[in-house]
Image 1 (cartoon, rainbow, N blue to C red):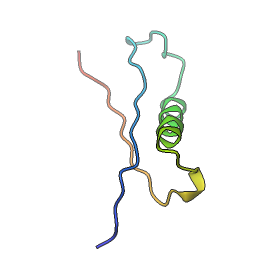
Image 2 (tube, one colour):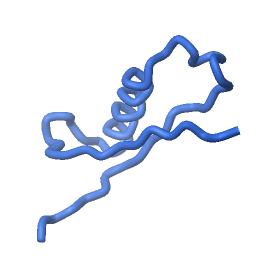
Image 3 (cartoon, one colour):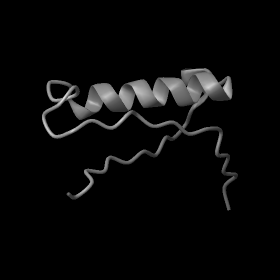
Image 4 (spheres, rainbow, N blue to C red):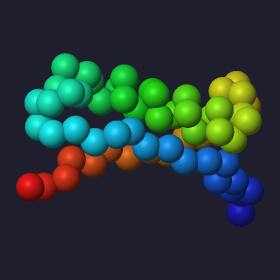
Length: 60
């Protein structure tokens, strides 16, 4: 079994459909969340071997 460490988590703000984030692609928003999670954990990007993230579009 490999050692697993959850070092941190972050999320982006939510906006309405085609609202304030309408022109921002998911990769840019995800990158901001990843950068924030690394900063909060005090981790350097080069020390990360694997990163998992998700993207959800809420219904309604």
